[in-house]
Every structure is written in C-alpha cells, then in structure tokens.
Length: 439
Image (cartoon, rainbow, N blue to C red):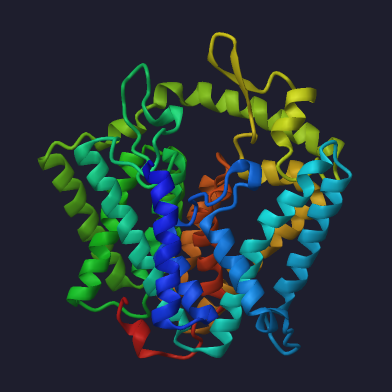
C-alpha cells in the first residue's frame, strides 16, 4: 500500500477517535476538517464509485446525523440569503446538467457540490451558537497552514520524493531549465502557491499590533510564506499575494506597516546572504508573452462557447467532454500521439461561466462578492479594524490567481476560500480581547 492509500484510512480513524474524545457534534467535525485540512482532498472511494474524498464523507456524515440542525431555517438570520443563493446555484447545476450533451454526469456533479454547502451551513450555525467559534476556526486554519508550510520546506531540503502523491504534475519540473516548482502537500505547484498565499494573511488577523512574541512570530510566519510561494514557482499566486498585501497596506495602521517593511528587508536580506536562488522559480519572463498569447487563445474560445450556451451553460464538469467533440484544438501533446484535452480553459472564472452559464456565474460571483462588500462596510464602521482587512486581502489574492487556474477543484483550496469568507461574515463586531493579540 502506498501513502495515498494509507493516509485516508488513518484520517478516518483519527476522525472516529476525535468524535469519541471530543464529542459527537457538528463543532467537532468542522474543527477536524479545519485542523486536518491538508488531508481533506484524499480519495476514499475509487473513481468508479464517484471518487468521493474525506471532506465529502465527513460532510455527508454531518448532514445525516445532524439533519435536524441542518434543515432548520432561522427567519431572522441575516445570513439566510446565502441559503437562497445556494439553492439557486444547485438548481442551475441540475437543470444545466440534465439539458447538456452529457447528462450522465449530472447526478455525480450534484453529489460533489453538496459537501461544501453542508459545510457552510453548519459553520454558520456554529458561529450563531458560539461566539468563540470564530477564534477556534481561525486557530485551526492557522495550525493546518503551518503544517503545509513546514511540509514544503522539508520537501525543498530532501527532494520531491517527500510528497503525498506518488506522481506529481508534469509542470513540477521544467524539462528545459530543470527548474523545480515545489508542490508541497499538493499535486500541482499552482494550487500550492494559491493555498500558501491565501492562508498567509490569517497570521495578520488582529485589531491592534503590539510588540509581543506571539505577534512577532505571526509576522515571521507571514513572511516565510513569501519564500514558500517562491519555491512553489507560481507567478499567479505571487501576483495575487502582491495585490493582496498592497491592498492591505493601503489601509492598515502605521505600526503594522512599519513591521511589514522591517520583516520584508530582513527576509530578502537573508535570502541574499544565504544565496538562496528563489527568484529563479518565477524567472520565466522570456515565455511570458508566449504564455499569455497561448492562454488568451483558449480564453477567447471558451468565451465563444459561453455565448453559445448563455443560460445554463454546458453542464458541470463537462468542459473536457465538450472540447473533445466541438473544439478539438484545445489540447496538449504530452508525447507523440498522446493528446490531453483541456478540462478547464486556464481560467477559473471562465470555466464557471462556460459550465454554469451567465446566470449561474452571476450567482457564484454574488456568493463571493457579497461577503467582501459586507467586510468592507464592517471595516469602515468598526474604527478601521485591521483584522477584517487582512481577511478581505486574502480573498483578493485568491481572486487574482484564480484568473489562471480553476483551483477550487481541490477541496483544500475550496475549504480555505469558503472558511475565510465565513470568517468575514461572522467577524466579531464588538471589541474583543482575543483579537487584540494575533491568535
């Protein structure tokens, strides 16, 4: 048995032990997901049986054993609008799938859509029941992020054999330059870069900044994540990270800005002194124009497909099946005679637009933008709270990187994005001592 077979079994056993020791309740299951986030994308069933993953199984467990809580609708709940939006999106998924050229995928796509909805539903319920759940969730996300950060640094030291996966993405090693793009806990380095960029902002969440060991440690982790993103070699993730930090620095208080500059100089100086050739992972500038033209050609074709199916799209997970028949020039030649048709148009937004249509895409964007707008209003109303500002910056960093790859196919990135949006929605409105320190 290889690691991909052993880890799912061990994770399920850990989940059972967690329920036994911590109590069989939704909070235990949600915190387990967040603490063990790096393992949530491991498959627990074969592709013939749907390719369900650990995250899917835990969420279905929650829905079955705590259905009474799940189905309750609180009329006065300010977040009930999201339930309505999820229902609309699910309806579009079903209708679009049934009316597509490949309706046989509809049921499986719908089943795979449900876990994240179940997860969100129980998270919102827990936030409503427990004022401290915000801090517990934040702590769990940071703990799982630290695991991913340590993992990639160990991988850099010992080599790519230190990996969860027996085989890695073909773009891990550039055949021409032999540059390695370290994927860390992921199969693909682009996904690794996005995850590292997203989670790094969690370490800056706090109302005020004071010189304490905890806060200095959090700032240090934040800047170590820059090195990790460079090792991942993801230009889109680094670009998103830069936009996110610029956005945050425009509005953050002066004290934090000072320490950001100090630590930036320290980290960059350390890299120079130790002669760490980090920038080489991003030094593919000579191919930048060619890459852009290649991607743009795919984007243009994807948009044409979207305009041909404007209402309900071509159906979820149908992109590869569709281009195999109708747009056969969208492929990569892995080796002579071996073609791989694209399963996404090298752009997360366009994949959703093509598969869900313009209506589904609009609902999807509302689900993301509404919490961000809510967060901005909270920031302006709460004496410019830095904590919520950095959560917004995290999502912005992902939105930028999402332009180049449909990353939420990986449960770990999907959970991280959704969890940060939920933290923004459920951010404590009143001053709280727990936020005066970086947790």
